[in-house]
Length: 270
Image 1 (spheres, rainbow, N blue to C red):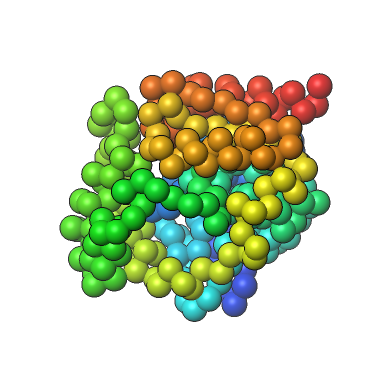
Image 2: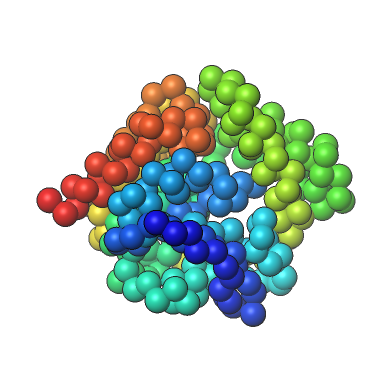
């Protein structure tokens, strides 16, 4: 199974970096905010035994071009798949990546054979946890915008989203490295990201693709609420709760996570 790497051209001539490995039906991995394609290391290797796995850096992150002006993560994913000649795929996204995956499924249902939102955000969802409200995130955005990435990274690393349940030092260091490298993406005004309207929170019942909602049992309450909304509103959606895992459930419990996703995808052929 050889590894193919390179860039594809999205909107406004933006270059997106991607990696492809394996064979079989396409499985696309979309990383979370402040992470990048490297957060999927355990999944990229495992799933390439069964599928053609595509992982990429969303616009502004790691090797992909920085974001300039207004853009759409959904449109970027569409251009990526078209450039790779992929007309149908399984899509797995975590957190922000899950939000992109859900919106993409609503905008391009004919291209999604299965949807797996993990620890997912949802466009238009009402967030109540203090970590998602002022002033903490405002401080982070202000420091990042001012170029003070060191202090911003310290604040981010202390948020519950980025604290592994078992305190695994290797995961902490991997996360901190990606946070520091990708903080410049947060310096882009948030209004630059264009999301489909009406928001996904109002359209979840329109999703027809088979769906598996995954969450860790130690994640923040907003993510539990979002997972409940997804699993109860998307027709036929299944839900998997992985124990003793936080927000980055794929990194904290890769064995259980990979097993749950593989069993779900295999069941679609049954």
